[in-house]
Image (cartoon, rainbow, N blue to C red; front, side):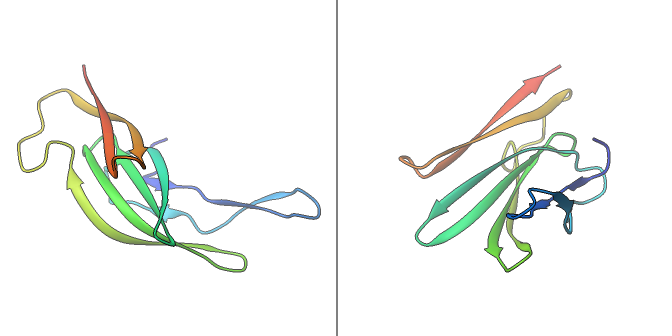
Length: 109
């Protein structure tokens, strides 16, 4: 919390040891909170909801031998092109495969 990054770990299949891999760095002040994966059409995407800047970011996921690569596809505000209400904080990401949509829960303090 407070690091503006998503820590990524890898597990050694033989020893079950966990080691930290390269982290996903988000913009300063974003406050990444929740993420969700979607596998569709042979591709995998990661959706990240940021609590402090109230944005959702999408990344295309590529799996390598010992690494996972996340390439940003888009960034959108939780309220689209409207101004985020005072006290609003993004709180959750849910991906619906059947409806091909992303739903983000918002909390108002």
